[in-house]
Image (cartoon, rainbow, N blue to C red; front, side, top):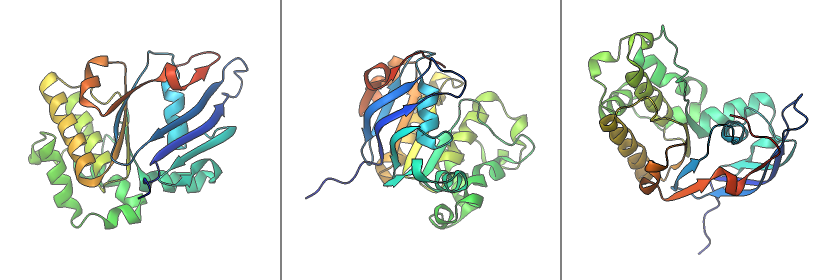
Amino acid sequence: MNEPAPVLELNDVRYRWPGRALFELHVPQMALAQGETVLLLGESGSGKSTLLSLICGTIVAQSGKVSVAGTDISSLSSGKRDRFRAEQIGLIFQQFNLLPFASVQDNILLPLRFAPDRAKRVASHGDEADRLCGDLGLPRDLMGARAGTLSVGQQQRVAAARALIGTPPLIVADEPTSSLDAATQVAFLDVLFAQSRTNATTVLMVSHDARLADQFDRVIQIADIAKTTRGIA
């Protein structure tokens, strides 16, 4: 029986930031299997943010191939990459990127407005938002609150719920536990891993905290998979 194709695969990917002639990121090969949880470790300045941007299609490699769920995102137009990202990738940003004046529920449901196929996988949008909030330890009475009024830790959990809703095949999380206390960090990772087990979701989490390593299927040091002529954050 053939092994399923990787959910994420990079082959001979190179990227130079415009105007930074001395910098180049080169990833010869990287692959993540369906349902695999992977922790990507690297110090500040090691090129983690550039790598995540290539994976998410917010920047495009000058050469090589970046495939997500079987699609070469490097070949898509900017608009098609935006639509593809909304459908196929759940993003948890280090800075949250919530809409501060929108409600918690509206923030969680936002990806479904731009991803009709992802929206179809959710039977009841409001009920699913409630469930995710409960799993992440957020009181249901916060669903109508403006996101900008929440604590930093609460905003982080709203951002996580937004990424998880609609079960995208790939979750990309950039330092998602940095604003959480120890107990909430455990709850967050439990929900993330439960999503992976139940829906065969692939999880790529970026961190500088090596203490998290034992909780993942695999740990990758960015220095082992990527070569840079000059590191950036």
